[in-house]
Length: 424
Image (cartoon, rainbow, N blue to C red):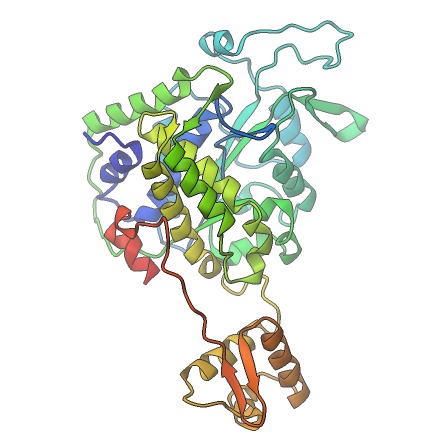
């Protein structure tokens, strides 16, 4: 039996049609959800918890639903019960979260009970027990009404909520306030590129919600099973036991630690981070390191440990980097400027040219896409400002050659052959 829970789960799902990258991130979401706030990474005066917002994106029939439904079925066999609704509104969601059932006795003992009087700051909050929910929906476009910007803004705020002095408070209908102690939200959704565009208007791209979302792009695996094989019963029991152990084993406020070597690697990754080469992910880049630390917690726990080692950082950085390479493809044309496709064409043309190309020659390649020559001039000026193209006086334009650094602290051999093939 593999010691690593993620590898164990991938082996468990090897005879399915869903891409392995879907299964990998489904089990990652489950582990982070089950840990909740019981284990955290100390970050200055703040704490980083392993809850994650994960969206599985793929065309119809890429078996998104299979991957998501199966991890939910497995987790439902543990004592975890805080599954989110299939469809809701912001008000109903907050009211439900505020009134979640009390924690199991074993968990209450670990958190400790602190009762409050009616005059207490927290009013009707009886116990300082985090209110947890796992929003898991294989058809995420059904979760709420399309373009519900206010709801998504609220979820964005809850991603890293950490306040031990007061609850999360929000007004709902009839001016009533909900008070939620330490809201702990995890999201695992499935969606097609077309429905993603309908569900999340482009103006959400720069907001806190989508900048906290990891977009997991997948393609058809090519595996076909007329009648899928029955899951191994013994392995199912082992996985359920491992997941339940994660849910029950940690006491509240337990700190994850890290080795000196792990710190050195994290330090270098943070100080030398290269952003995704896509302006749509500008706000994501500012949260990339937090995503990495969340993933480090999950991978350490998947290895039956609460210590982040250099191996854990390598695995986390590799896993995250693989997703980031595919995130622009996951979005497709969503949120792109009207000139982005023309810019792409120009760079491709310049990159294959043996010598600088003049303005008129370039115009021939994009004449069907630009309205007039002045538009091309503006686009070329933008490419120059972004250091993607250079104007050689008297000769024309050339593509700026980027010196790509060898990827550091990444080991693609840690991924499956199928996942590596998607990166090529």
